[in-house]
Amino acid sequence: RTYYFSIVEIPEFDFFLMYGTDVTESRAKEMILGKLSKYFSPQVYDSIFTGELDVNINTTRKNLTIFFSDIKGFTTITEKLEPETLTELITDYLTEMTNIAIDHGGTVDKYIGDAIMIFFGDPTTKGVKDDAVTCVRMAMKMKERLRSIRRKWRSFGIAEGLDIRIGIHTDVCTVGNFGSEDRLDYTVLGNGVNLASRLESAAKTNEILISENTYNIINKEIKCEYIDEISVKGRSHPVKTFQVEDLIPNEIESNDLNYETDGFSVILDEEKIKNKNEIIDYLERSLDHLKK
Image (cartoon, rainbow, N blue to C red; front, side):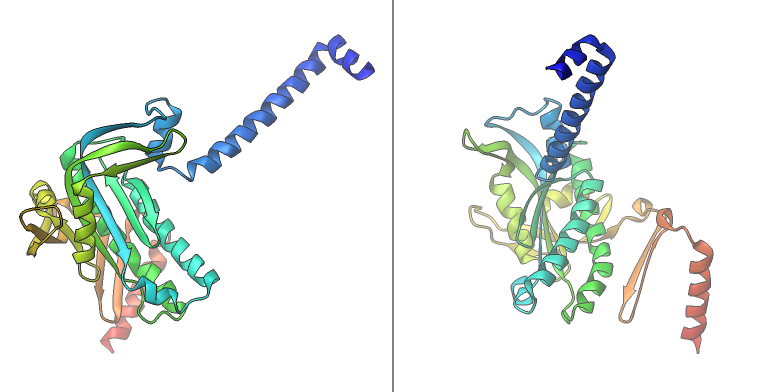
């Protein structure tokens, strides 16, 4: 009783206690929100907590670019690894790919084992063309990043290394909150999603396979090669497919240099370099060694 009486008689102390309680509650809320954010793509998370996205069953039709990828032969690889090693490797892979997706503004829809589904165009969009181009550029960046991840996988005794397949398609799909009154999933549905998944399964090792729809949007910025037509369930006509090769010269970023051949690879990103002289010295010594 004396304790509470003192709080009333000394306003400063009372304020301090209330402030301390508010800070504790605020930190607790921040911790909870931080944990919740791991279950949502950043765009979806931001839209929910800014009030832009209602938390109820609500969908709309939009022009989206959908991305699917998976690891070739993943089932066989898993049979050779201990659970702890498998968890470490797949977590490392998914983290790297997800970071690239977030950097490019993609909405990470879901992980299906080793597979990743991402889409561009909702809840934020830069326009159909920019969304499609950015999605393909993201896929190209993922392929580049595989080189460093592949070395780690081989260090764990996975002789096959790490190879992926990627499928991309642009189409009008239904996107929004699906589910029940008690549990919702923010995702995208439609034939366009099925086609993107079909393209991924039809892609060859380390190939980015895109539909004619996507090709018609991006072909001024990204060089592609016609591959073949594929049959897709639910579509009366075959779908033309194209393999992504490279950026058109004026689209190539000046600070990027990537080259790989048997026994040799180099990845240059000037924005990340902090020890240029050391790298130059190492390259000169490597060149002298190759000339011998």
